[in-house]
Amino acid sequence: MPASLCLDWIYRFTNNEAYPDPLEEIDALCTLDSNDEQTYLLLANRNSPPMSRAARGDVIGLCTAREDRLILHGTAVVAGSCIRGATPVGVQGIYGNLNNRVFCPLTDIRRVQSTELSPKILNDPQQANFLRGQPCVKRLTARRRSSGMHNRDCQASMNPQSTYPELRLCPPNNSCEFVAVGLDPTAGTWESQMTTGPKLMPSFAIKWNGSEFRPHESPLAWHQTNECFFANVRRRQPTVTCIDGPCGTNGPRILRNQPLWSWDPRAPRRPRDGELALSAAGISLFWTTQNTVMNFDGASRWIARSLELFANSPGTTKIETHPHGAFTFLRRLFNDVAPLPNKSTDQGRLARIAMLRVYISGLAAEMVPNHDAVDAACAALVAGLHQLGLTTPFGTDESGGQIWMPDVNRLRQPQQN
Image (cartoon, rainbow, N blue to C red; front, side, top):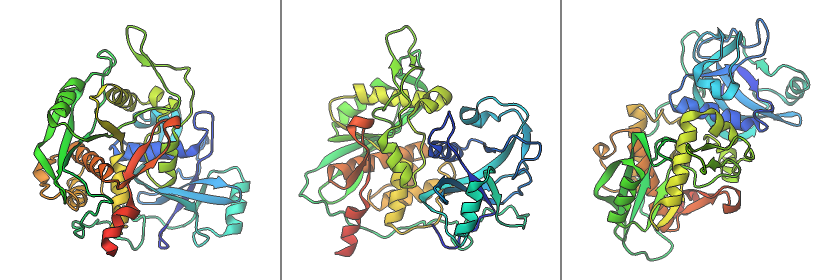
């Protein structure tokens, strides 16, 4: 946590019936914001709840409690005046359908590695006193941010590096040439039993020539159906395929023995241990739980399609990754501490391409024209690194499947030689 972090408010999340682990709620808010959904915090059920007069630009620390200490998991910036009324559409999956409640609009929601809140922000006796009370909100500053600046860190630059140092991959063992493919699935339809969807899904292919990765011939492909993707895999014959989506669950299950497939509402609500581990490492993502599959339509159909792709794709090695997490670990490798711009912006896309170019020689911006294609290229890189023994798993096969990320320690070794 940066020592210069400036917070105006503390918002303490607590467990409830819908979210036994409040971290899932925080990660859902982060993910909605990264997907350009208008995101809100639900305030206390009072006429004038705490934080209802927060000013645009105020910075909120997203916290939980452990004994007498606050644990900081992320930050958010107030996007404007609070509103009163029904639950906004974007967060209905989190809060349900409520009426006459106050919601605080948020932007720039950022997950950090979970850590104890610094006593420099709120000293230990003040933290203990706050946690003994009922309120979940505490104001830390008296000033208002009238400029609307999104200053979540008083000293850190908001502009990520556009270039990164050139690094040479040194795989542990001599490796032959191979092809790796990455896929960014889109939401499928229940009517098609998750074999197709309204939005094309991109795949990207790279080739390892013994010393470096390069884009494979016509690397980017777009697929309407699962079979279209499978045909592309059969044609390229990759050694490993990496999919940006869950390979399994630890509770939610699809009811397949009926005319129209659907999620089983009676399935266990257990989270995947891989997602729990990534969350603890400061990576936000929709957890593959009953909350997500029953309450978020788009995410639920994306998860269902990913499960079908893993179950039915051609017989090559298949692994799962999460591009946002992969890019976060690469930024840590490059010691880039500046916040990464939203992936849907040109700045965010180019910042991610700059990271990919470190390991994929000859990658041109026009090869990955939008953030979906960039995510597919990132999945391809994780696939290639996996084949070289340069990834690390989060989670277990027994509790929902493994999620693979770049192994920062092994990738750092060439810099030290």
